[in-house]
Length: 200
Image 1 (cartoon, rainbow, N blue to C red):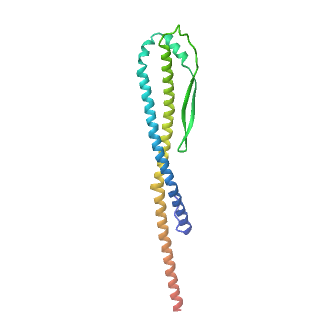
Image 2: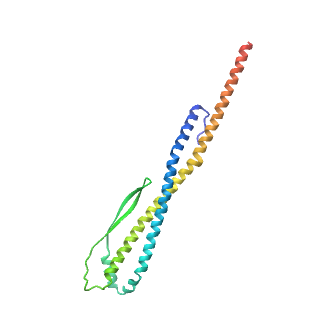
């Protein structure tokens, strides 16, 4: 930290800095509140996604017993191929976060006469599972980005509230005392000089 100068210029500099910190602090506090809300909401969405994945796994557990032969498993693997995961971006509190739009699957027809009756439902369930998994990845990224930004913003708020503003106030007080003392000393010197001139 630079050494504090006890001058009127330094006093003005400290007063300007204090004014600036006080002006930016409410904005940072609002951003912190918004991020806290968004982090909570993101966590709830992530938990809902994980619950949906568990629910889907429980509902499709009956299909697993039907996948006894390798040909059915190969058929499912062939018919559930991801062509593209489409993502977007959203702006939350000045942060660009990824959003999940949709998944494009390759549409491959299969014979309804030569495949088992459960394949349609199994393919649909597998596509749902892939969608939920990819959406979960994006939700986790959102949560991580928002939590990281909340941590940074909280640190800035604390820096302003607990360090910078009190430091500026203290510096202004010290400079004010020093300038007051210098002024008193100058007045006293003036009076002494005046008395000496009068006595001479």
